[in-house]
Image (tube, rainbow, N blue to C red; front, side, top):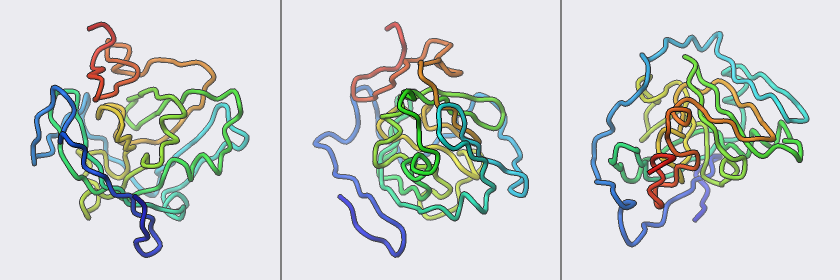
Length: 202
């Protein structure tokens, strides 16, 4: 369901008949889970680079990136450690707006997400092109806290939370799939919570 919210497009969520995917429990808390310490990021030097199989490589400053069209989405967040937090309000820049400006080449099928601190995760380009995927800088009406990925994190509602990478600073478009940090350690490449795709071999 789509509706206008000022100059921000708002995307609301229709509640499923069951509140969470199989194997998940619902919590009001938002646990902090990171593989490394929270980085200190200076917005005056922050950059977001998109490169690889694109017609136009770009490197945005924070001010330039914030000038792109924005959206608000309400979505559930599913962590692979089995908790689900319902009805999160995220505000940010849709992935589609980024793709529109860089123009992926026809052979681009996958994306490696790069982050401050060295974290990476891989996703099919068509998953990132889903309407509700965005680069969020606000959560539940407040600036995104550093421990939760601030100043900006990727949000991919249709996948487990490790695909919603924190502290994003780059996208690399690729023709072939390549595993990211957790995927190299055995986590599932696709990570669909409704299929319980937690680990590659389970």
